[in-house]
Length: 331
Ligand SMILES: Cc1cc2nc3c(=O)[nH]c(=O)nc-3n(C[C@H](O)[C@H](O)[C@H](O)COP(=O)(O)OP(=O)(O)OC[C@H]3O[C@@H](n4cnc5c(N)ncnc54)[C@H](O)[C@@H]3O)c2cc1C
Ligand code: SF4
Image 1 (cartoon, rainbow, N blue to C red):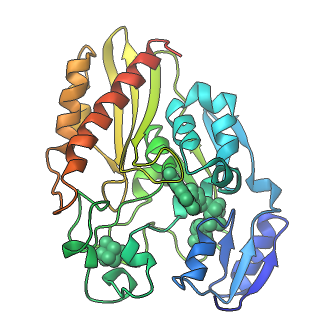
Image 2 (cartoon, helix red, strand yellow; image 1 turned 90 degrees about the horizontal axis):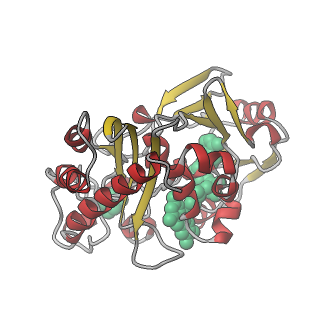
């Protein structure tokens, strides 16, 4: 690991001050991803600014019809929050299933959205793949059982964040502050960058942007959401497939629905094809399975990950069934 200067900020203004003065300074929240990136020399900033003591970026509150979660709120706090559980089952589920208790107690919401991919070639120093400036995607012909089944053209990473699809199912906005003091609210569907647009990053954030929080739209009466993931190990692992769904019902008729999938493409993806199967119809398990089928119709699996197509279809169907059950008042 290369030496770096370490700043401890006490407020958002402090963070901005450092990021304005010190070019390339990286924010460190829980450090659960950043430390690995530093050790593997995937990033080597001259300076790091710790967000740990920045109180104004932590908390969960209802404001202006939305629920705001500060960027440095831990994932454990999100999982345990009663208001989140009541208004966004998908977000509570996704938080509760992230990593391990140890990771959830350190890892933060902002860091979770900004974490880098887990592709083993990307993380290994001996593979100078396209994402690291080389000219080969080793996953294309190599070991690709955990890689993408959609958008897998030049780089086959899968997006690792649990919270991303769940927050998207609740039409979240990501609040960002530039080092120039300018605040931006980025709709979560516009937050991601495909490898073909920019191989060097996964989000639209500039180097000196700071995520200050997210605001999601809570489920009202007749609305329910859920997040389900499938993984090889029951803990200490990332998802093979995951899906988040929000179902808004009028009686049993689907007024509105969101289906967002992840762990299967370089970025989380909303599946409007799956939503169209349900919208305006009476909800049934049969339709949920048809929506699952629609969600995977254009998958392009690689040699070793064809299993993900069936798995994802079932993940989407089960997630929709659970979201609808909750919309009908099921706990
Ligand atoms: C064994 C293991 C299993 C895991 N399983 C899962 C899983 O199942 N699902 C899942 O979603 N994740 C999983 N993770 C990843 C974990 O959730 C992330 O490492 C964590 O959420 C990152 O948050 P952090 O606060 O520690 O971020 P950090 O490590 O501090 O930062 C991560 C990146 O985000 C940047 N950053 C942090 N905060 C901000 C901010 N406010 N604004 C701008 N940039 C910022 C940092 O500069 C850095 O580049 C797992 C990790 C491990 C080690
Ligand atoms: S999937 Fe992306 S990160 Fe992994 S080897 Fe290919 S180019 Fe590199």
